[in-house]
Length: 131
Figure (cartoon, rainbow, N blue to C red):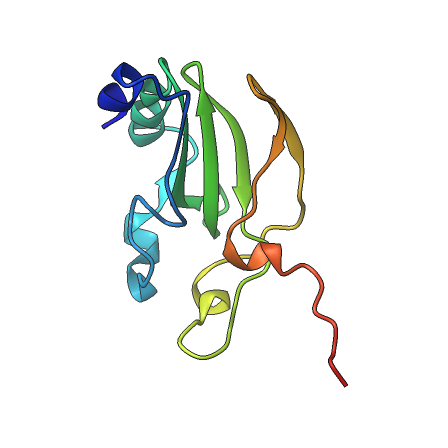
């Protein structure tokens, strides 16, 4: 798909939250997690040689915590990793049971200028009571 997008003149290809695994993983989080170093990350870096790519995945830290993450690749390198900060725990969502929360929002340089990434609930930064 990356080759097809690059051939079509796409500069930035963005996939949704947890696009590499699907969303409702529950007890499969550890099985589907990608370590920060290794073969899968090498493959993902390779996809970004001709265009910038953003993917969603479960990322495993060296201390074996799992994060719902968005990864920005460019020029064959991982440029930025955002760990979802606000994990929903209402209705059908129970992310805090399976994921560790990220702890910050950062901007980073891209070929398009400075950028930042948010994952789903991260956009709902302020929750103001209505009454």
